[in-house]
Length: 295
Ligand code: G4P
Image (cartoon, rainbow, N blue to C red; front, side, top):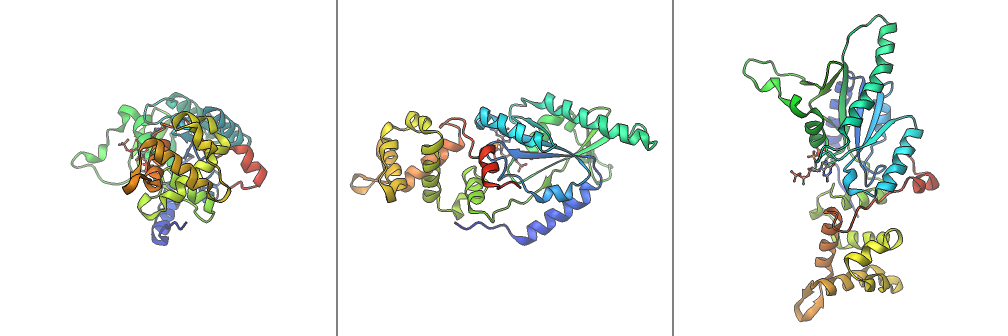
């Protein structure tokens, strides 16, 4: 499968990030709780050197809670502040505030030693497209989002949202570019819907996903479709056989009552993305450690 991310976009995003990062103390990095490794761009480690770091596992409502707990421990061990949220419902925002306050204390202490008093801590949200940056900012800032820049006569420039007397948040998030070099990373980004389906082979994607589900969450497959889906294993054509079973049981049929596996594939992807299949994590921290695929 081939994925595209135009170099022009990447250069522009990187330049913006470099400019804005100079102004801030803490980087609030959003990753998708279903793929906390593939939705993270390692370049941020370089860009955010000497800054406090908070990793937020967003869309935690869609991911497997036990696996999410594993990821929290994984990133804490690496020295990050970490928490999980559902930006859509706003759950977990108190913890985010508390963690920023903790990070602030360290920063304030450093400021105090250098004779700087009462300077607010400035934060910036970063993450790959569609990870939920805007939703998070709206939810986190709550009523404070009222943008002064929209009033006539207010000079345009960087807008800071005052969260409380200690913390200000840059209202424009930093866009990170995903890393597609690894085919598995590309596949996972495609599965969560980060890449437009039109340019992808959705049938192949759904097939790969079903093989993964058969290994990691067989019970969920059985529950949503039928036990026959799991039994449909004929060596080479395993993916196709599984899709065929789903097509037949769901009435995805072509002329002559033939199984329409392309239609079944779209149904499977939709079931995953709408959490109808259940809360599923596509990546586990243990596996990253095993394969040394750490970023
Ligand atoms: P971005 O700024 O990083 O590009 O992402 P954005 O906030 O636009 O969010 C992308 C999609 O993810 C939106 O859905 C948003 O509602 C959804 N989303 C963000 N955070 C969460 C979360 O914690 N849980 C869940 N379940 N969804 C989340 P959309 O379908 O594109 O838009 P809409 O239908 O919500 O308007």
